[in-house]
Image (cartoon, rainbow, N blue to C red; front, side, top):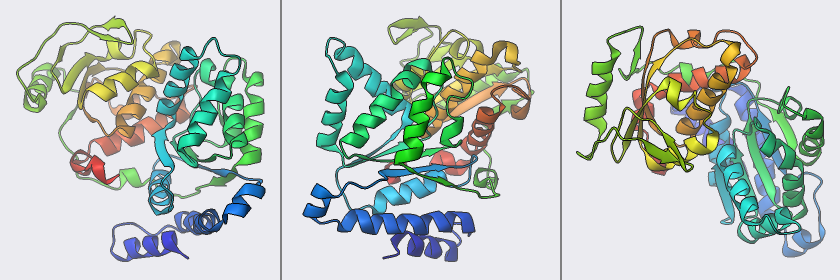
Length: 355
């Protein structure tokens, strides 16, 4: 069957998508995977151990990786599946490890429990940027593969570039070798960044305007759903964090606070689970002397985007001037692409329940 190919051709015929040879080639490849995965008999599943247990799809920002992941997830006829952002998946793994710290082999317990629920796990945007994740990734994925769990993941970089220049990276190399060995690694080599094509831009991003505060205040007052508005500090991950204002559904931060006070991706995941609207004021140019701040900014935007949160901001410079050239330039290209899409009316009006 050609479920993905037929869907794609119809979408391009209706002008819902722009035809792209690179996208079609991967969808055709995944149609074969759907057939093989769906048609294995009970005995085949019992005795046949495939060499490959999934796919690692990588490519530059905005090339269509999420669209491909969406459709494969929807078309794959199995109920024991889940789709989750890689950051969030690892957040849950670290939480479970903390609970099982006295166990001899906690990762074995965790992977067995995952096997009881899932045959296949979709992980969006694999990116390893902390040593805690880097040091356990090989054993975690080895356990998943030993349990026969299939992994479908996307990334902006090929496996060999994961955790590049990371602390003690030599200890991470076996994880890269495992990913290359157990997953079909495919490059989505499209020339187009489709996030930049849409031009229906909203007015939530205030750039080069030093009178930003009353404008952000007006936005906050419009989006806050109740009158329970406060400027008191809140607690995230059991640590206080200063806010300019917050309500039940909206929160307003100074850039230097939300990205400059040793926050982590776990903080941003907790915030994304609590609030729908985020306002960040006074973003400014950053150099490699403070690259940790730009790293936290990329984490924050990744998590807001993947959880489809709404964003308003002010910046004293153009977005592409926030971080011009440095060690994290590759990661920041994805951030710029996502910020471009998050400005569109289509993004704001998108119904998350359709994902």
